[in-house]
Length: 140
Image (cartoon, rainbow, N blue to C red; front, side, top):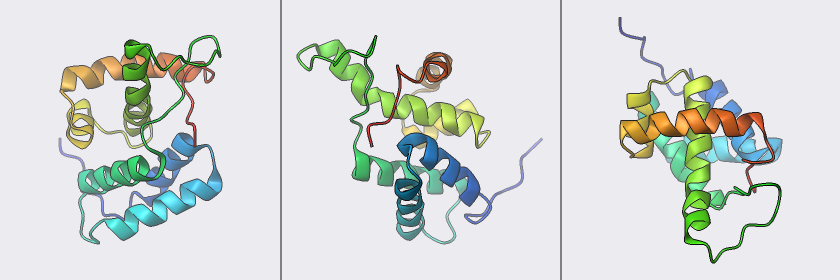
């Protein structure tokens, strides 16, 4: 069964919800949605629009997301923590795309540009981390 094609206007609420979860700010969310729709083609497909959203998010906020354990400051000289820190925004974005937009793992992998197995792992860990918001929070 195929899902109906969504137009850019059909998913504006999903994009706003994702933006709000990613930025934790109404003002930043509105700004991000505005930039996404300004950046994307008016005839863009859902996947292309979400790629544009991700690009706008990274351009505005970077991938610099707090990903610290026990609320302590991350020490930037640990290579592993630096690597995890850069992935935190994409992990959170993956979970939100799946939960809010209902996208399949394959579609999320296409948007983020990672293998489907990576997305599956991120979804597993991301859901667990989102339960405890002190472990995964946007630094916007």
